[in-house]
Length: 140
Image (cartoon, rainbow, N blue to C red; front, top):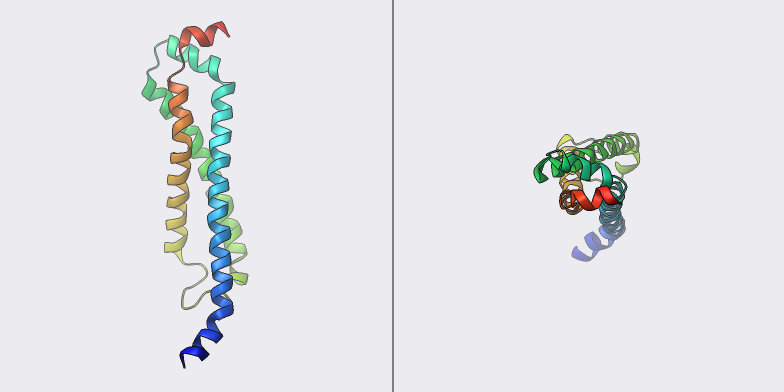
Protein backbone atom coordinates (compact mmCIF):
# COMPACT_ATOMS: atom_id res chain seq x y z
CA UNK A 1 0.00 0.00 0.00
CA UNK A 2 2.86 2.40 0.79
CA UNK A 3 4.30 1.79 -2.67
CA UNK A 4 0.98 2.58 -4.33
CA UNK A 5 0.53 5.78 -2.31
CA UNK A 6 4.14 6.79 -2.97
CA UNK A 7 3.75 6.17 -6.68
CA UNK A 8 0.46 8.07 -6.81
CA UNK A 9 1.88 11.10 -4.98
CA UNK A 10 5.30 11.12 -6.69
CA UNK A 11 4.35 13.53 -9.48
CA UNK A 12 2.47 16.08 -7.31
CA UNK A 13 5.30 15.93 -4.76
CA UNK A 14 7.89 16.62 -7.48
CA UNK A 15 5.84 19.50 -8.87
CA UNK A 16 5.43 21.08 -5.43
CA UNK A 17 9.15 20.68 -4.72
CA UNK A 18 9.97 22.44 -7.98
CA UNK A 19 7.41 25.13 -7.21
CA UNK A 20 8.93 25.68 -3.76
CA UNK A 21 12.43 25.89 -5.26
CA UNK A 22 11.27 28.48 -7.77
CA UNK A 23 9.50 30.44 -5.02
CA UNK A 24 12.64 30.53 -2.86
CA UNK A 25 14.71 31.56 -5.87
CA UNK A 26 12.17 34.29 -6.64
CA UNK A 27 12.34 35.60 -3.06
CA UNK A 28 16.14 35.64 -3.17
CA UNK A 29 16.15 37.49 -6.49
CA UNK A 30 13.57 39.91 -5.14
CA UNK A 31 15.70 40.63 -2.07
CA UNK A 32 18.77 41.17 -4.23
CA UNK A 33 16.77 43.46 -6.52
CA UNK A 34 15.42 45.54 -3.65
CA UNK A 35 18.91 45.81 -2.17
CA UNK A 36 20.26 46.95 -5.54
CA UNK A 37 17.52 49.52 -6.11
CA UNK A 38 17.84 51.00 -2.62
CA UNK A 39 21.65 51.02 -2.81
CA UNK A 40 21.47 52.75 -6.20
CA UNK A 41 19.01 55.30 -4.81
CA UNK A 42 21.29 56.00 -1.87
CA UNK A 43 24.23 56.53 -4.22
CA UNK A 44 22.26 58.89 -6.44
CA UNK A 45 20.85 60.84 -3.50
CA UNK A 46 24.12 61.14 -1.61
CA UNK A 47 24.25 64.92 -2.01
CA UNK A 48 20.62 65.32 -0.90
CA UNK A 49 21.23 63.13 2.14
CA UNK A 50 24.36 65.15 2.94
CA UNK A 51 22.36 68.39 2.76
CA UNK A 52 19.64 66.92 4.99
CA UNK A 53 22.25 65.89 7.54
CA UNK A 54 24.01 69.27 7.31
CA UNK A 55 20.68 70.97 8.04
CA UNK A 56 20.18 68.89 11.15
CA UNK A 57 18.64 65.56 10.20
CA UNK A 58 19.80 62.80 12.48
CA UNK A 59 20.82 59.31 11.40
CA UNK A 60 17.56 57.75 12.52
CA UNK A 61 15.47 60.06 10.33
CA UNK A 62 17.64 59.29 7.29
CA UNK A 63 17.28 55.54 7.93
CA UNK A 64 13.51 55.98 8.31
CA UNK A 65 13.38 57.93 5.03
CA UNK A 66 15.16 55.16 3.12
CA UNK A 67 13.09 52.41 4.78
CA UNK A 68 9.88 54.31 4.00
CA UNK A 69 10.81 54.43 0.33
CA UNK A 70 11.56 50.71 0.41
CA UNK A 71 8.18 50.10 1.98
CA UNK A 72 6.55 51.61 -1.09
CA UNK A 73 8.44 49.09 -3.26
CA UNK A 74 7.17 46.32 -0.99
CA UNK A 75 3.57 47.56 -1.11
CA UNK A 76 3.63 47.78 -4.90
CA UNK A 77 5.22 44.33 -5.21
CA UNK A 78 2.83 42.68 -2.78
CA UNK A 79 -0.15 44.30 -4.47
CA UNK A 80 0.90 43.19 -7.94
CA UNK A 81 1.86 39.73 -6.69
CA UNK A 82 -1.43 39.26 -4.89
CA UNK A 83 -3.38 40.31 -7.96
CA UNK A 84 -1.43 37.91 -10.18
CA UNK A 85 -1.77 35.11 -7.62
CA UNK A 86 -5.52 35.57 -7.47
CA UNK A 87 -5.72 35.48 -11.27
CA UNK A 88 -3.58 32.35 -11.51
CA UNK A 89 -5.28 30.58 -8.59
CA UNK A 90 -7.29 28.38 -10.95
CA UNK A 91 -4.09 26.79 -12.24
CA UNK A 92 -2.84 26.22 -8.69
CA UNK A 93 -5.97 24.36 -7.57
CA UNK A 94 -4.62 21.18 -9.14
CA UNK A 95 -1.50 21.29 -6.95
CA UNK A 96 -3.20 21.94 -3.62
CA UNK A 97 -4.75 19.30 -1.41
CA UNK A 98 -7.42 20.36 1.10
CA UNK A 99 -6.25 23.99 0.97
CA UNK A 100 -8.21 26.57 -1.00
CA UNK A 101 -6.25 28.42 -3.68
CA UNK A 102 -7.37 31.76 -2.24
CA UNK A 103 -6.48 31.07 1.40
CA UNK A 104 -6.36 34.45 3.16
CA UNK A 105 -3.94 33.23 5.82
CA UNK A 106 -1.42 32.16 3.17
CA UNK A 107 -1.68 35.49 1.36
CA UNK A 108 -1.29 37.45 4.61
CA UNK A 109 1.69 35.35 5.71
CA UNK A 110 3.42 35.78 2.38
CA UNK A 111 2.74 39.53 2.35
CA UNK A 112 4.23 39.82 5.83
CA UNK A 113 7.20 37.68 4.81
CA UNK A 114 7.89 39.81 1.74
CA UNK A 115 7.59 42.94 3.86
CA UNK A 116 10.15 41.62 6.34
CA UNK A 117 12.41 40.54 3.47
CA UNK A 118 12.27 44.03 1.93
CA UNK A 119 13.00 45.64 5.29
CA UNK A 120 16.02 43.39 5.83
CA UNK A 121 17.29 43.92 2.27
CA UNK A 122 16.99 47.69 2.52
CA UNK A 123 18.39 48.13 6.02
CA UNK A 124 22.08 47.95 5.02
CA UNK A 125 21.81 50.64 2.29
CA UNK A 126 19.73 52.78 4.65
CA UNK A 127 22.43 52.54 7.32
CA UNK A 128 25.04 53.43 4.70
CA UNK A 129 22.97 56.49 3.77
CA UNK A 130 22.91 57.55 7.41
CA UNK A 131 26.69 57.37 7.62
CA UNK A 132 27.22 59.96 4.85
CA UNK A 133 29.55 62.72 5.94
CA UNK A 134 27.76 65.99 5.07
CA UNK A 135 30.98 67.82 4.20
CA UNK A 136 32.14 65.09 1.81
CA UNK A 137 28.73 64.86 0.19
CA UNK A 138 28.61 68.61 -0.42
CA UNK A 139 32.10 68.62 -1.95
CA UNK A 140 31.21 65.97 -4.53
